Length: 289
Length: 343
Image (cartoon, rainbow over all chains, first blue to last red; front, side, top):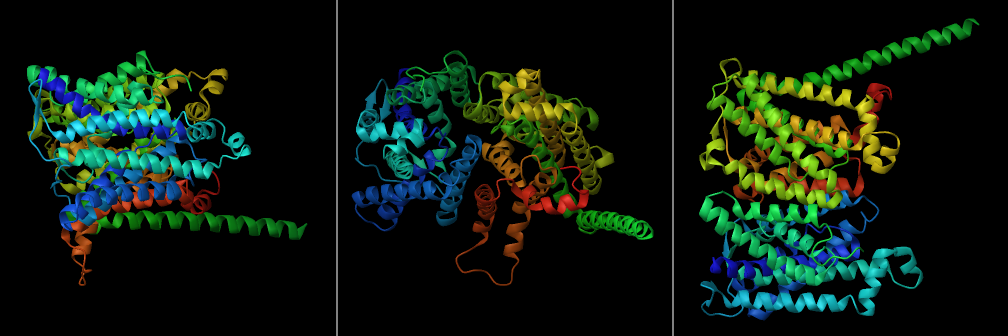
């Protein structure tokens, strides 16, 4: 039980990291970014190519991976998001789902659908926390999540962050005072891609990874985390991510191992998502805005 | 006076000729569409069944997203429930095919109605997320429930003697597709269709017009689930075995994409796009592998990955350049064929 709790916290850190990017895009553009996971996928595969296939040092993998993710973010912004600015939010969502599937298809085409193992940032054996073996990589992940969530919360207090919020609330009025919507859009998608890239780079070495690993299993819990946190709150994304991770793992323990219910992890996430939306739609830390 | 009558007569003749031409074109297209079934043997009969099943699923999503403006990213839940219900009826209870399909349709309808109740409270992007999460839960929990679905091994759904041949089964699928098509046409051209359009455009205004928004939303979900469950039932008997992994959530995403590519609220567009997306994974890899000249960097494995890639590229092109989908591209032709009558 304790082991599942600890595993949940560290699993939840990945959800939180993705949720931070999701919240950023939602705050700035009122869009559900279903492509957030694949920013991480692209970063992980680019880094794997540089570090394992070409044998370059680890820091080039990190830089190359993040650069690939940001390039993808800017391309998505230019090719898909900006032309669909005036389309309905639902069409935008379908398009972003399309972007995620497109990216997975490209990765499979270039790299074949085989599992890969990425060397971790820090070698070393697991630390025992409440009876669960936690890798150093996972400790780093949790720390990075805390730092990034705090940094993003701070970002929205700066002039630039306020400009993003202003542009989100009234694009025209923001334009009148000199805030370019195009520049804001580029900034937001670039930052979201960077956050997604960091999530992918940090999570890939935790286990084996396959094309689509960030989208197929991580994205729905990450969205549930963002919703639980209130969709507009960055501390909420942190808290929501960890809470979803814990609920998922306790679900696996209580429902899956004790009661033999199949798919306990998904069931736990779905139940929590429904509870939040029906009882407290503004989430734990969300505000009306 | 005399010239007037003459002109009138000429127009009449021209009109008759135009009508005859249009009927001839439609008949020629139908014959062309029927050719694979007539000449293609069992392989093409199977493929046509699959295309018809996909078309029913496309129309089901069209009812929900096109007519009622509600998004569902978890349609595999409804189709899967229908498939497992039909398989359960056929293999465990030995019920005739009609009962199995009816059970599938009802199971799909009940499931969709429950999701519809959630949709009364949760709207827009949040609904998309809920349906996605629900689809995942259905895939991993309900479809792996051993007593109902046989767990990982799958549930068997043998075909009864009457439709045991692939040709007879293809005709059954096409017949059901025709029924669903007719239902969709009646839905759109009656009061219910106009009420759904009002709900889609603005729920608040619709309710001030005296439209029962709650009722119509639930009805749209139920109808969509009914068609999806029916398609699931057909799928079960088409494949003769159903497994949870047939209903992964990528499948549901492809279904939504194919409906959007076909063009929301365009019956012809949705059917064509669904059939295309159903056949692409079956035909393209074989076709490419059979080519005399093989491109240097491609191989068998890559060909099997190409279809989803093509699907998504089509989606992005459609959303970017023709938001109305295939239906929009075909509109001049359909308008000529129907003389601007029906959409």
